[in-house]
Image (cartoon, rainbow over all chains, first blue to last red; front, side, top):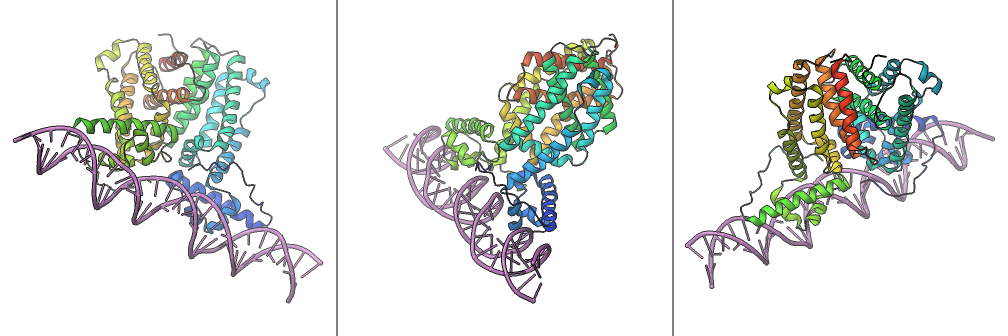
Length: 209
Length: 209
DNA sequence: CACCATTGTGAGCAATTACTCAGGTCTTGC
DNA sequence: GCAAGACCTGAGTAATTGCTCACAATGGTG
C-alpha cells in the first residue's frame, strides 16, 4: 500500500490563482475524508469528490496518495514546532511550573482543531518513510529541549535525565492526544492542571522548591 | 475495509487434533504477518502462506480478515485483564508505591512479547466494531480500578479524582507502549522506576506521606 | 481577437485483494 | 477395510482502488 517508488515527483507548481485554490481544496477535502474514513478507506476518488474537483486534477498536484498525507502532517508539524523553542537563557530563569504549563497548553490547543485527523496521521506515520524522517526530527527536537530543561533548570531533581526527558515528551503528547480525542473527552482545562501538577511534582523530585 | 456484515459466523469448531493445530498456526502466522507488514498490507494470502496452509483453510476458521485481528486482540486483553484485579480490601492496606509499581510492572511485561503486534492492534481497534466494545470494557475496568485507588487510598491527595484516574491509566498504557516499542527503546527497568516515581509523587500531592 | 501555456476532466486500465467453491485427502468409527 | 464425515487445497472471481492519458476548458498576453 505504501508505494515505494523512490522517485518523488515535484509535481507542477501552481502559477495561477485558480491552481492555488484547487490545491487548498484538495488539502481541506483530504483532511475531512481521512478524518472520517481513515487512511485506507479514504480513497483518492473520495477526496476528489469531496473537493468537487476531478480525480485527474488531484494527481496534478500530488504524485500519489501518500503525498497528500505527508503534506498534511508536514504542515501540522511545522506549525507545532515553530511556537515551541525558547532560548536557553530563559529556561533557567523561569519557574519550572510555568515552563511545563506553557508546553502542555500549547500541545492541548494544537490538538483541539481536529483530533480525528491527528489520530489518523499519527497512526500512518510508520508507513510513510518520508514522514518518518520528519517526525523523527521533530521528536528529537522536543526531546533535546526537554533534556535541556531537565539538566539545566535549578528546580529539577530526577534520577535518570534521559529517561525523564523522553517520559516527559511522551506523556504530554500521548495523554493529551488520547484524552482529548476520546469519545468522552476530558475537560481540557482540568487535563492541563492535572498534567502540569503531575509533571512538575515529578521533576522537582518531591522536595520543597 | 471494515466489513459491516453484522452476522458473525461461528465458523466450524475444530474436532480433530489436526484442526486445532491449523488454527494455532493461523494465529501465529497472523501475529507475525501483521507485526511485520501492518494490517492493510498483511493480506490473508500472506498469512496463509506464512502458516503454510492454503487460503481456503484459513477461511474455514475465520469468516474474514477482521475476525483474525479480533481474536488476537481478545486473547491479549483476556490475558492482561486476568492478572489485574485486586480485592478492594488490599488496596487501602498496601503502600501506594507498591500498588503503582505492580501495575506498571505488569503493563511493561505484558508489552515485552511483541510490541510491533501490539502497535498494529491498538491502531486498528477503532475500525473493528466488535473490538471497540471489548476494549472499551477493558478500559472501563482499569479506570474503575484506578478511581477506586485514587478515592480510597489514604496516601492519595489529588484535585480531580476522575481526571486523575484517567490520566493515570492513559499514562501507563501509552508511555509504556511508546517507549518500549520505539526504535531505540528505553530500558524497561529505568522506565519502570521513573514512571513509578512520577505517578506516586503525583498521587501523593507532593506532601510528605 | 488569437494564441498558447496552464489548469481541469473523467472514463478506464492494471494491479491488488478478500473471499468462494468444486473437488481432493486424511481420520475416525464400525 | 470402508464408508462418511472432517479437513484441506488453490485457481479463480468480483470488487475495489490508485493512478493515467487523451482531450476540453480557461486565463493571460501581444
